[in-house]
Length: 366
Ligand code: ADP
Ligand code: MG
Image (cartoon, rainbow, N blue to C red):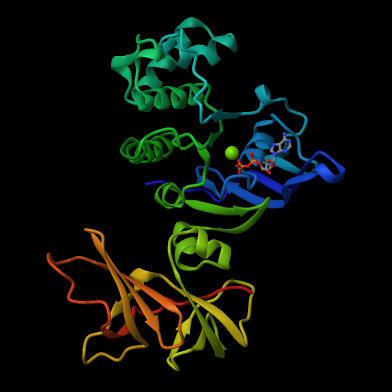
């Protein structure tokens, strides 16, 4: 569907933003280097206060870097005021004009740019189609739902044909079901228009659902950049592994390294292969992560890698979570899908073996 070009839309080079001075100094961004490709759905993911909005504001031109530069298609955008940048923003609050109709809101920016009325109307019609809001054209925005307002805000931001669209937590005011629906919608609109989207969220599931690539941020720095699969299956460090989904942390000893795999010995004595982050060569004592859905209770004839005693069994409808106390005292969680109805057959106090899927262990950087 989406074919992302290798062309850089935005290059962020050594960008820092420091607010205040002396004791009140806050380093909101600390030496960010990042390239966002043309046509990409790129997500900045991180907890509140990590610098996501600050980075968007620098790209939009509402604020300036303390050091470093931002290039748009190879050109330094520092001299351009916000309205001259081919960049537009969708804010969390939507910032629509309540006394105007849907169509007037969408056409507002174009009208301000002095476009002829016929051109504005044609573009508004096109945008109404794009966001599936044609029947709502003449409604006041105060008379439409939150999800519909979100669509109008998106249409308004896309109307002037920006090269890059910035979206700052645009779905956080919506309830769960609507949010899920809008995630699919945003992805569709991005694919249809081919515009580069830089999307901000603190919700890891949202980031995994929507993105071509994700940058995980923590206190002003980038911790890891990669596809949803990279980020989820191959977290490079503890912060990323912990922030994205649930995982099991196990201590291990590196026995050997060959190519892209290391061989590690777990506390149970079992030896398994493990991948490791780029630009590292693991050795000595390491921490290995294994996702709960990549492990199963071993059948009676199967060789198990780990074993322990079941502490709790949590039934969640779709899945069952089984918490197992391993021999070395660590707690290990298995998440198994309830493929059959009824009780899973595992009870508290059972002694069980644990089997792993192939190639699911990842060594963390120190
Ligand atoms: P996020 O969007 O990830 O929640 P922000 O980019 O809004 O984070 O903020 C990053 C850090 O910079 C926070 O510690 C915040 O308090 C601080 N910050 C943001 N804007 C200002 C400002 N204008 N003056 C001082 N500190 C600021
Ligand atoms: Mg923010």
